[in-house]
Amino acid sequence: MEFDTKPSPLDRVRRMFLNPRVTASEKPAEPFHKDEGSLEDLIASVTSRRRALGMFGASALTTGLLAACGGGGSSSSGSTSVSVSSSSSSSSSSSSSSSSSSSSSSSSSSSSAGTCTTLPTETQGPYPGDGSNTVSGSVVNVLTTSGVVRSDIRTSVGSYSGTAAGVPLTLTITLVNSNLGCTTLSGYAIYIWHCNRDGNYSLYTVTDQNYLRGVQVTDSNGQVTFTTIVPACYSGRMPHIHVEVYASLSTATSYSNKLYTTQFAMDRSFCQTFYASATGYSASVTNLAAITFASDNVFGDDTAAQLTASTLTPAGSISAGYTASIQLAVAI
Image (cartoon, rainbow, N blue to C red; front, side, top):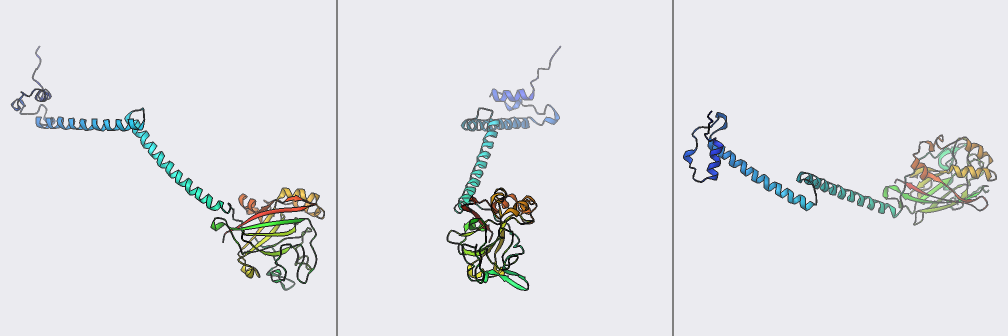
């Protein structure tokens, strides 16, 4: 049996490259297969492939070197992937760092005055005494009464006389602007009022008194301090203190000038213990047992954060009296 020993076109090409004595005349005139193209095409193709392989080799070498610099022990593809991931991580880290820095800056800007939660706007209720309603056809406005600007609000002023009975409570309020990084607000007027230990309000259900109402102007620290009594718990409401904020003392003469109205709540646990022991507050024990913050028609729709920020937790004793402080954060 005979075998065809005629060299293939690829063999001839190899000989041309490996043996310089092979001449162009040895190149076949026709392609071996019609669809493979001419030998010139084949040579061009081989040369092109060799160049491509050379470029690929250089690229692989570069990638390998980069991977080695990156300290990876896996394949160049894996190393590249790790390197990209690491770069992305770095970018993310950078972004995180920037965010953290921004957060830190925000914290430090608010920390100079402290962090704060804006107290919700609440109803003034039916007994404000700020000129917004009447009793027996007469406008009730204690804000225009001489002597209403005072720290101790337990005693009536002007044409009234009398002192509210009850356990003393010294209340310090710090007014801050939650729209300006919780910075303190000085020169603002704060008007507070609340019921007596029987659950009644002066000027309304106790018409011959105007005690437990007073105005003060915030100092350079945004603070005012009132001396009052622990309020009662009357039927249908959690124990509370009403508050109005005015831009200045000169504008604190009518409800129409107020900037903010809210209410401070009294801590339930404190009240339960206090009412059970303090003289004159017995009705509050029953009233408190019938109400919760959730069922209260004012505090019931506050968020947990708002309720916490609005709640007073007095410290002290029945014999020595109590003190409490609160940050009144308003958005103005």
